[in-house]
Image (cartoon, rainbow, N blue to C red; front, side, top):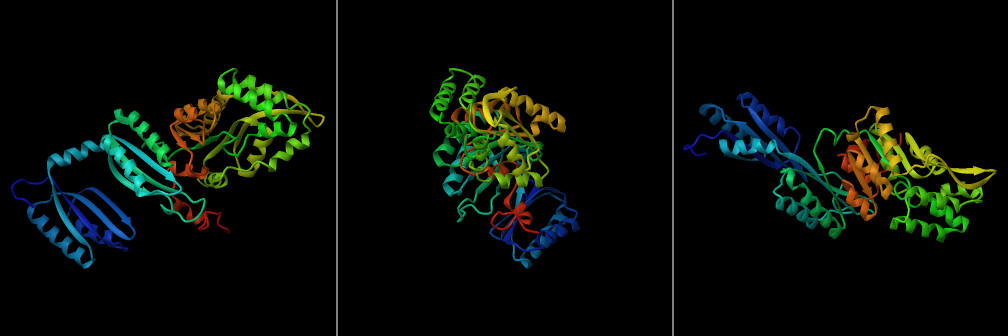
Length: 418
């Protein structure tokens, strides 16, 4: 350490093989010498410890004694030690960084490679974002079993004005690399979401109920043409939905209810719902689909709220009518508000998940809007877009790590027996 300029602080770095008791031993020495800790951080990668402690510089004699004691104890513990003087300017720069906007970048895929991390970190560097923490949330980054997830979370800070172009770069990188990259503000709400609201068709389940019913009724092509017209903007959701349902007239009820076992759940749906219940979240289905299917999902998955369209059946046959009101995009948003108010939940604490245009109002209204395997227009409107993983990948976006769930799951991700 130079004697020309008195440092404002000292950064002490310890590295070596991790084992229990290291941090306790070192901080006990700091306490014995009356050191003031300004910052501390520790990481362990493959049993290799890196521990940094920033302390205020004590008086000359005390610092010399402290340094000698730390060096001797670190050597006894098998740790390498370095001491770096930190000037007042450097300390002020660090303190300024603490006041900058904090962001969380989550990289999700079936595996995360060095190339993925290089691209994401390069984008952050281009926009002058400083990475302060990197953490693996999944069990592994290169899983060997089919269906397993990989996820890395990066914490960064920087200028809020750069957010829009950075998001655009992340979106382009995600499409090119076949991974998902989520970007969100670090806030008190990120780990304190309280309600998840889901679209049903092509979100919670792998298909569209009305399309399956149309095929049963022999009117699949006609229904598809109406759907295509609606996508072109020829008519709105209510009109297109009414026309499509009208074509189902005369379909026997037993065929309708027989569909319950024919459309599978989206991969990860059961694990997601099981975990959300475990964590105390409320859940809702807000669907432009049909109530008979949504109620069945409610029983299977333990959903708290269900709002969907009531297909009218009289004398054992579909009448071709829907009992009003129709659950369209605007009604989904209104129902989301109602549920949040009933539960005493801020809209910032709501996560809304969907894939279609009629999900945009509730996605835009919520604190976290997620386009799940969605159409391009929905991906552009939503805060986050997930296409590479199952629904349980959403858990990473609220900060849940796979190892957090180990006491409640088997090693293969199944529910632990007990």
